[in-house]
Length: 77
Image 1 (tube, rainbow, N blue to C red):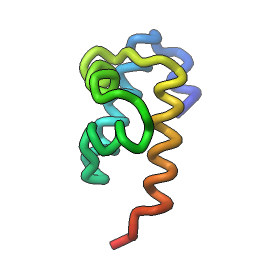
Image 2 (cartoon, rainbow, N blue to C red):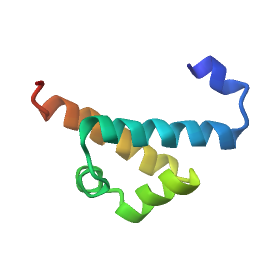
Image 3 (tube, rainbow, N blue to C red):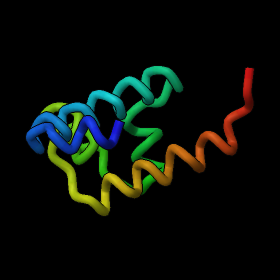
């Protein structure tokens, strides 16, 4: 996936990252508030990322870290 993203404009890459984030939240049944609580990233920042595809690298890294931590602690069904 990384290789295919290299040839894309940055706006397209950011849109793909935001869409992937939104889908993962839906799959895991996670609200913005839950992700914000785990990651420390404000709900407004998460909403802006999903809507406008803008987020700082530090905030994006915090979201990724939170997903890993939540997967470790979420019981498998």
